[in-house]
Image 1 (tube, rainbow, N blue to C red):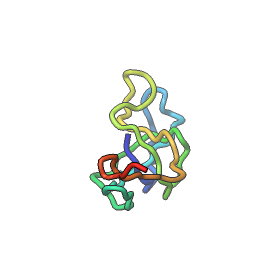
Image 2 (cartoon, rainbow, N blue to C red):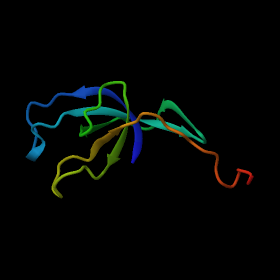
Image 3 (cartoon, one colour):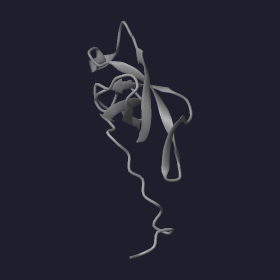
Length: 98
């Protein structure tokens, strides 16, 4: 699972299988640097089926290589949630016990 931002809509006149009514979006994975989600791009953008009805500009959770649905699903990514906030904590090795 990765955290990404929806950067565009994908319009397809025809879709395979049970995907006829599922919207597709273009998502850009975001960089996670230590204890910061700095929002900069990480890797290439991918097309994902939008199971969470996310809109352009929203930060989302994306499942890659295992789109929900049938085993023969033609999708390789799906938006499964819209992120409200991200809380990152220091690594356990660096934290002091109180």
